[in-house]
Length: 84
Image (cartoon, rainbow, N blue to C red; front, side):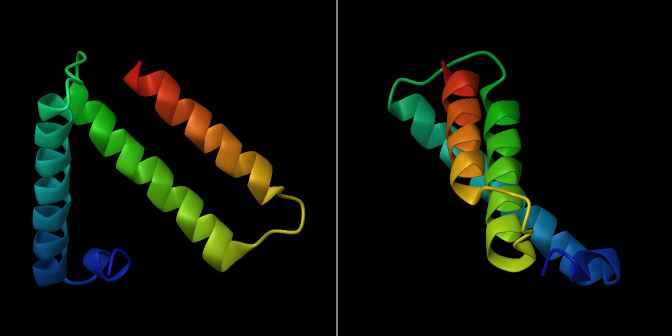
């Protein structure tokens, strides 16, 4: 869907609406759980993109030179750091 968003305005609008909904909902839930750091919405959006990028890489690309276990650990460390 993400790749189609670049070629179809209606899909792009739907995709952006979905991204906004997820970002706002996740931010709201994190605040309810006591996570209220500075720029929380931005951090949630970056986190979504980081996880999406890792998932795409690990599922579709599978480069021989990448240790996906190490990459997963790096993603987790980045997420933990970002929300401390």
